[in-house]
Amino acid sequence: MRRKDRMPPDDETMSIIEKGEYGILSAVSPSGDPHGTPLNYCVINGDIYFHCALEGEKLDHIANHPKVSFCVVGETEIQPEKFTTKYESGVVKGTAVEVTGEEKQMALEGLIKKYSPGFTREGLEYIRKAKGKTKVIRIVTESVTGKANR
Image (cartoon, rainbow, N blue to C red):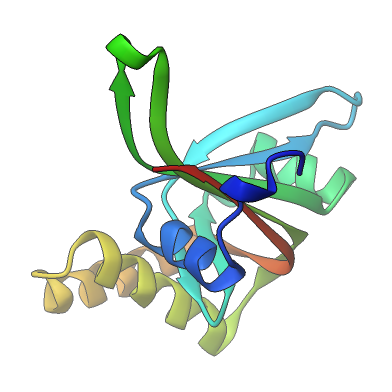
């Protein structure tokens, strides 16, 4: 990165990513076109997990080329009088793989914990009913890069 002064340490970048509301999965389609998909996610042991339907574009892209990137923008503040924006962001690059069994359950529970923390019991029941109609993908983190202007 050109602006080394704006690059937070990896642990701080992972904290930005963990706290993010949503992220953008970037992948390559079978025809070679770039494709970005906004989605909900959770971070467990430094890897990104997200869920999706049993089939669809995301899965086609991952099957075509499992190397992906995942971008999260944290807090932002536009400062019009200074012609700049305060921001924090992080990008994970890695390999996307489907997970099953206990790891799938752990990831789905992680999503409930992040997005519906007051509804654990109901969330576990929802998982039980929907798990068979859901795939879970793990992005195995290979590199993390952050950038911030605070």
